[in-house]
Amino acid sequence: MKTLSLLSMCFAALFATSVTAETITIANGNDYTPFTDRKLKRGGMASELVEEAFKAAGWTVKYEWLPWKRGYEMAKAGEIDAAIPWTQRPDRLPHFLFSDAIVSMNEQVWARADSTAASYDDLKGKTGCLPAGYGPPAELKPLFESGAIKRDTPRGMTLCFKKLLAKRVDFVVVNSVQAASIVKSSVEDASSVKSIISADAQTKLHVLVGKDHPKGAAIIAAFNKGLAALKSSGDYEKIVSSH
Image 1 (cartoon, one colour):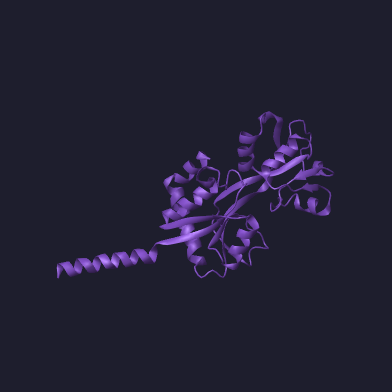
Image 2: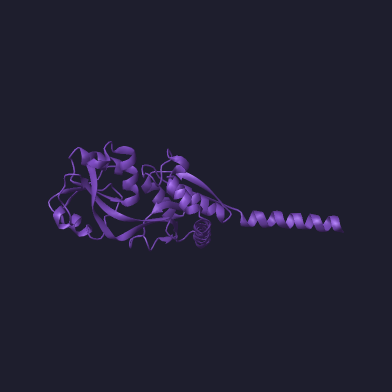
């Protein structure tokens, strides 16, 4: 009887593991230093945070490195479990569930060290660099849309800084974390550029899951639970500082 009872317990434990253990496939993208790029350590800061948060909740992450638009559309159609890291915008709300923020940071305007611009009005008539797919802060959006400021849209933020130093654009719109990373890794003389404006609102990056995904709510709940565990243990700050 004891043997049968022990076997029953083993089978029950095995069954429970098969039910609760989950593997999630997430669309990820390149050229978003320091957050995501398959060439970066652990795929970048956001990639590591997401993987570790799900791990803390008992889930395993598999990344599919895809073009940004393709990964986004696959998540929207439910052809992949989730996509990272994306901002929350009104046009996305009807289609996606959003997690708690993976990271939060301020949007900034960077210019060459000799720039005299100090306000958004000072940027009128100039050319700003913001890669395709990036949204400007609320203060700059109407200026771009009206044509008061011209927009250059290269394929990545590092190219924006290269264009800035080459005097092909007048300023770069970039979040504070990404700016610090690019200046450190790709700008030979850090004193040649400076932050001139900081937006009031924060930009937040999220895990997004298509609203029609049958496990959408469970995926978001698992991530949020794991993220909270990372923060309470201190591991969150360790991961962020390592990048």
